[in-house]
Amino acid sequence: MTDVRNALRLPAIMRTTAARLSALYFILFALCATLLVFYMTSLSARMLTAQSQETIDEEVQGLDRAYRQGGLPVLVRMMENRSRQPGANLYLIADPNGRILTGNVESLQPGVLETIGWTETPFSYQRYGESAERRNRGDSGSEQAPAVSETRHAAIALVSRLPNQMIVLVGRDLGEPERFRAVVRRALMFALGMMAIGGLLIWYFVGRRALKRIDSVSEASRRIMGGDLSGRLPITGAGDEFDRLSENLNTMLTRIAGLNDGLKQVSDNIAHDLKTPLTRLRNRAEAALAGDPAEAGYREALEATIAESDRLIKTFNAILMISRLEAGYSTEPLVKVDLAATIRDVVELYEPVAEERDVVLEADETAAAVIDGNRELIGQALSNIVDNAIKYSEDASGKPTVRVSIEKADGEVRVSVSDNGPGIPDEEDRQRATERFVRLEKSRSQPGSGLGLSLAKAIMKFHGGRLDLVPGSPGLAVVMAFPQAKGG
Image (cartoon, rainbow, N blue to C red):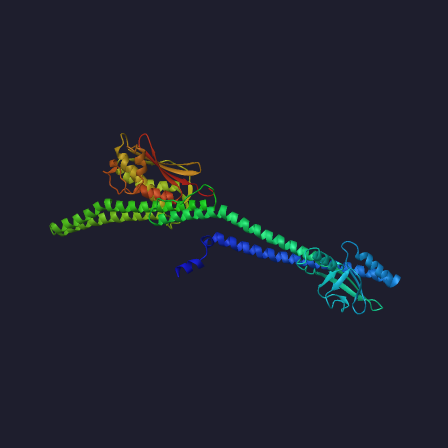
């Protein structure tokens, strides 16, 4: 039963869309070509028949004038002269009973001479002398020579009667239209044959190559679906639709692999870095239960627990916002934002913190710099950067200073927060500093979760900009590069 089902299935090549489309196009073209050829041949045959009728009408009119002028002898002589010319029409004179008297027609299909006027359908006839010619060809061989079949022709004719009731037939052979039809049909068969051969050649040189590329894409897809996200679809460099599809899918796979790596990194970081605050919460609760059951002790433990919980909630909110911004799922609206005004607000907010830590916080006076963005997100990113700058500028050799400036260059608006602290001299450390939960060894003594620069980087990515860490001498400059607003 399985063999029967396999036998009834289409070949592998016909199960592809390209092969099916090619077959449909071939069938459609063949049908259209056949219909067109038959229409053109029929039209051409009708035109030739009409021309033949017109020629016969002219012949009959000429013969009629000759009969009127000279009678039957002149008519017979003219018809005999015309019948001997090469490519002559059919000429025949018969008695009232239909017996042929003269002309170049030896025999007719029965009933042709009984109807006066044009013959309704083509009739068969035999030219004068063809029977004797066939007999001579048959007798020239041996006695067992096969008999030669009669050659019958098809023609149309105009039949008329003379005043003495004798019958005159003038006709024209239809061999030329039939030969035209045969030539056109042979040409059609040749064209269809060439199309079939061309289709096979195209399939062999082009279709097989396309099928091989599809098979390679399918094989790579199976490996990727098996869990190997490092695999990529093959690209030949031809620049065709297969390469464009592979490039888009490879970009998508790179994006998916990046998101998976980020998810794995977040999971690992949560497991390691959030373990400590959760342990502190448990220890405080346990210490409160094991200590003096006074109301003041319980209150102090609860307040410390609430403060630690707030820090955890803040950390989780930061992680959630980073994930949404990096995945492009944020629904934060974009409006016109004046960065200069945002800088003034953040500097004013952190001036008390800077004074408490004996840090000079200053902002350069600049004109308005408008971009398309979200004011709250930009303010949060700038706040994180300024807060980090204040923390790490405390170790400066001179007076700790944090300066916030803004400039326009190369179609960008750049907000720079620089300090004169120890900075991050190593380039690899500067690249790691923007990753989640990454805290360099020099920053372990400072409070924080290692998410400030990660959140700022995600916010810059959401705005189509970038976050650069530029080493200073001394210190570090964190640059937020925004694209300028459209039309601004």
